[in-house]
Length: 89
Image 1 (cartoon, rainbow, N blue to C red):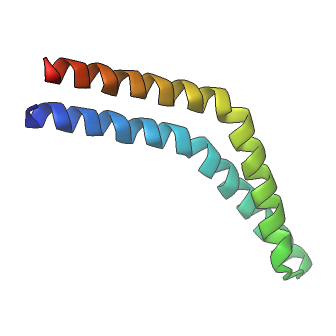
Image 2: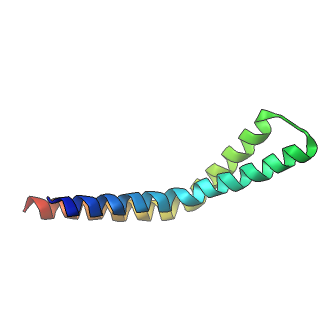
């Protein structure tokens, strides 16, 4: 197993992780900004007003993205297992 193989595998893994997490974190960011603007406009400084909607929307985003996440993780697992078989031969 050479250094180029390890670097390419890690690059691929980091790219897949970024691709999986970016939509979920983006939804949380957008909801957080919307709630912050609402709080600034109404002078309501309740902590649960920020936490509860963000966690609910994030859970919904994870559930909606689950087929995409599963597909990405399964394909990466197949690549790693095929690489293990190739390296061991």
